[in-house]
Length: 389
Length: 102
Image (cartoon, rainbow over all chains, first blue to last red; front, side, top):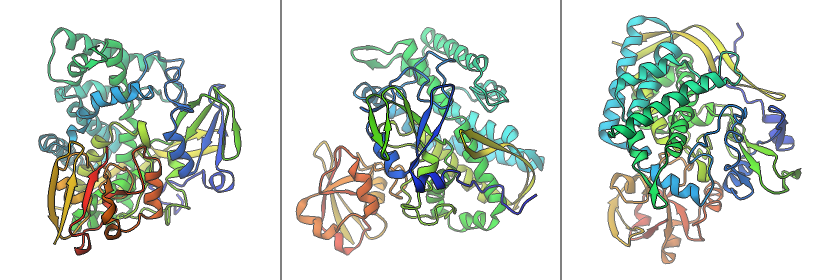
């Protein structure tokens, strides 16, 4: 074992970011020019006319999902002006995590999960604690019975990916079939869940179609799974290696909001997101052809040394933190309010209940992006949580 | 104590008083519509965008480089734009009027 802390996520993009600003990778014969600097990433994310999301469904995702799905994710794979209308339909629903009742339920779920983990002593936290927390929290976002989480937990940590990281159409179909079934149930017997609310939504003078509702549901399931799991797991590993930070959160609860933003910046749970170029253009003095792909490398932009002081350090109460961990501009993360609440309550509850965390074993989850290798989290993390009571 | 007036997009005037924290926090605590403060005030989300009524810009001062970079890509920004999370409440802000951005 080296001295390097397992919660350290070193940035593989530093050299490229400083030297030329863009990198290149292939993805299933549809290459990607990767933009690395914060200013370029922001400007490009804002320019939906030249860098579009409304391409063939699945193409802006890297690795590309064009071969495994036809359903367009909404509002994610739509551009203005239609995007604005779709987003307006769902915005208020995705702000519900700020409501007192929602927060109280989420707090109870997380307290229970941590109490169980403390009772177990040693446990593999991803499968035994974090995936259950993510899944149960999703029942609040969907406003469905908590028991539904059991099905989602049984799918494992990746909705689209199998063990070997490759895209797995069979696995994706499990999700699509499930959503189809739930939408049919909601159509027949409307309730107060997200499926029913979507099917009853008015769009351009008509109701949303089942395919559109499905597009929103697929996005909701897929967008908030690996990302939330990685954010929680990495935070837990960090507190295992930094007990002084856990104590600080306990003593200075007012900094928890800043700590959440800093974790999102440092861990950048989503490495990058693609766009399809609609016209020949230039980024970082590099010519890019129409109908090729670029990616906005959030993880690199969040370590941009021209913007962030000590970018490779976690500064728990970082005061100015213009990160793009939730994306930027029109397509910024719809689930960010939910994600922030989970992370905030998780950290607060951890600080209240846990005195120290021992690392027993771990297996890194490393993404291969062309020449770049980036650790995004863990495949396995075995810990022992010690109670402070 | 500083008295701060917000004009919302529906032309409603909300007058609040505060003595510490940021203008964004004051607005969020009092439910001023249109000021969300999603990121809690670290200059990352631009959901606390306001326009300072021109005669009060000397009181609010100038935006930092990082704040300007955020505002530059906001389609509704103008020369009077500020992110209210970056406006620290002090006596100096007493009497200012802010228009909540669309």
